[in-house]
Length: 520
Image (cartoon, rainbow, N blue to C red; front, top):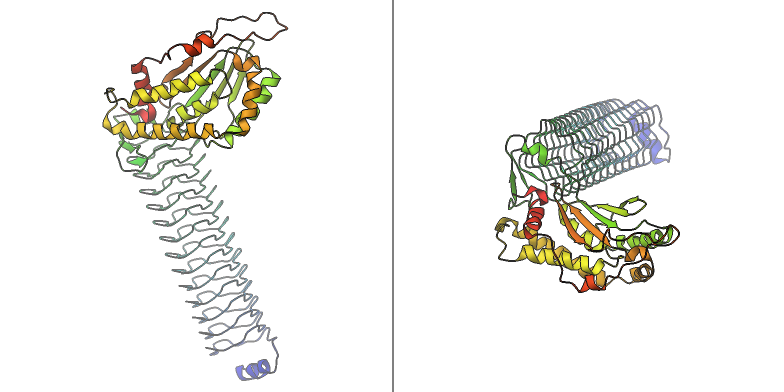
């Protein structure tokens, strides 16, 4: 069947032209909407500007075909062969292209939005400035493909092969690259914000200047990767391999990277405000200085000599310990759990319950917080159910008042922003506490139980290992159980509350605050 016969039959309503041989034919501008050309031989055919919307091209041969500007919207190209085909500016939106072969195909500025390219072979394909929004490329082969300046928002590249591919300046925000192969890929200046790269292989990849804010890189392999100037704010880097990675001046503000391997990595100039520094592997780390300012404006710089940087990146987790001078019973445990549950819904730093140690004589609750700045406000919240709450909270406010006083010269102007932030955070917490309604029932219950009336101690430990006793009830450790079958009698706290608040030594307070992020 030749082209003229095909057009006549199509005009009469015939749509099935499967297995037809039209190789090298000129079909430019032709309109064959809904046509069935499955298994057809269309190699070297000219279909430039053709309308093949909803066409069935399953298993068709379109090698070296010219499809420039063609409309293939919702077409079925599954298992089709389009090697070295010209698909520049073609519309392949919502096309079915599973297992299609597009080796070295030209797809410059092509529209592949929502196209299904599951296990498609795009080896060395040219997809510059193409649109692949929400396209399915799961397990596709894009080895050495060029996707520079492409739009890939929400696309699925799970388990895809993108080794040596060029994704520079691409928009891949919200994309799924879980367990994908991206070794030696060029992702410089790419937008990967919110992308899922968990378990991906990014060894020796170029991510310089890339936007990885809120991305998931947990368990990813980034050994030898170039992350110079990359934005990794709020990124999940848990158990990520960053061996010999270059993170020079990378933005790691509030990043989560417990368990990350930074062996031999370079972190000079990295921005590390509110980023934990414990649970890391840091042997052979290279770091001359870091930026600890909240906005990355270098207002708080920490410089290192020789091996000081390795100590800096192996900090103590900031913790709050409340020691109660009596063992915990079931009723008190129930009331306390309810109170902390209500607090957690209103206070962002209460993300996980405290660890608990119950002895024959005492109970210890230990809260681990994300950073040093969360210590004082979290302590203000954590003590709420206890009778010692009022005194402890007053101590916390007095501590901040002391370090904010102009006569205290041990804290230089560089740290004034830190003090301002601490005051602001605590002020917000105090207002928050005053608005609590549901927790009041739990606090009323607490007042009836001996456990919450018992003397307490509160000890804060900062990320530099420094500790500060915020409150030490004078009756702590001075009581003994009346007998094994009765509750420990509550102490008379009236005199304690009436006394002038006794703060820790001012030098100890200042040293403790200076330990926040190793400020010197």
